[in-house]
Amino acid sequence: MITIWAERHDPINSFQCEWSFGSSAVGGRGYRKLRYTMMANGRVLRLGISAHVDGHPVDASARVSIVINGRGRGDSYSVLIPANSDHGTTVFDQPLELRSGMRINFQSFSNTPAVTSAVVSFLI
Image (cartoon, rainbow, N blue to C red; front, side, top):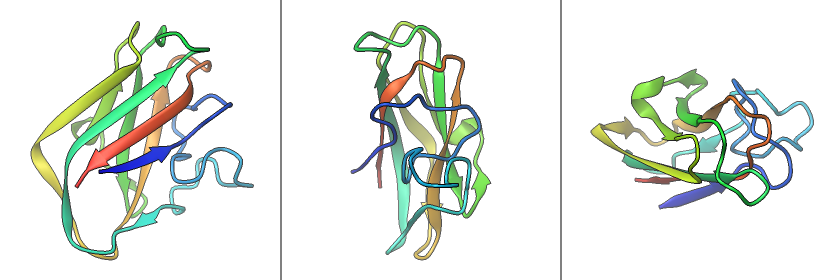
């Protein structure tokens, strides 16, 4: 399992790829090419997310999807936190195949700018 802490104090932002480094990276927010490199072949089996709004469940849904080599994988490889919750998990019907050398990032989609302290984890 790999866990990534995207934000600690700032909100996650829609259409941004800030998960590999947070929003504090200069010019990094939204830059799909900053990412983790797979060191061996593998398959993403599950994806999880937790987040809160000032210590309370999120008041609007938030989604994070996987980005591979700078290209988004859409809703089929994403995880959703429903409104009035603080976590969400997804088990993929078809595992996402990854080869050594592929680069992974995550793209945020949120309807509330107050979602903070967000963590994404994935099982390979």
